[in-house]
Length: 194
Image (spheres, rainbow, N blue to C red):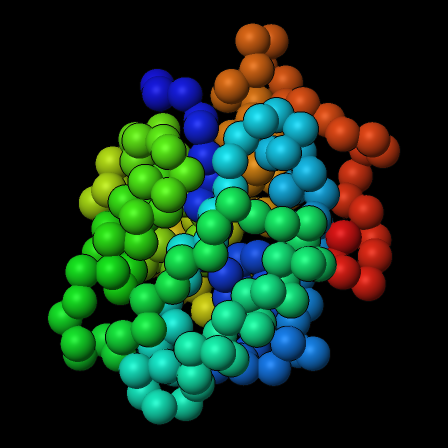
């Protein structure tokens, strides 16, 4: 198994509560445990980034500026991530960056200065898993109400929540098989989503 140099997160439904085509920073709510999961990765020296399909731009429902403002708000609430990348294209555009294609994963790895094979992608739908596989990265599916049963069945690995997914990835890296811990034992309950 390759070393874990970076974890790339899907945005909506994985790091943030899913608000369809959200262009309002005031509606940004991290999922429970997201801040704690990121703190664990930071403490372990693992880089982070976000890779997100934002087809609302291509559909004319959002502007690039709105997507950036939502991302900036999330970055503040989550303590900062290494890079925020998104595909603005509609599904029918046939671009190489829209998940399940590997473009966002490959670009994020490049921006972080790591190989795609040294990354793990955490997401909530099959497109996240397929993008990871296509780029040669590991994948962890954290199912939500939007996840189809066949996507869960096809996933190489699942976790019940984001914090468990991150702890499992870190445990694989620890010499004794235990994940690193940062302060307190569980997710921190805050207005920012923990």
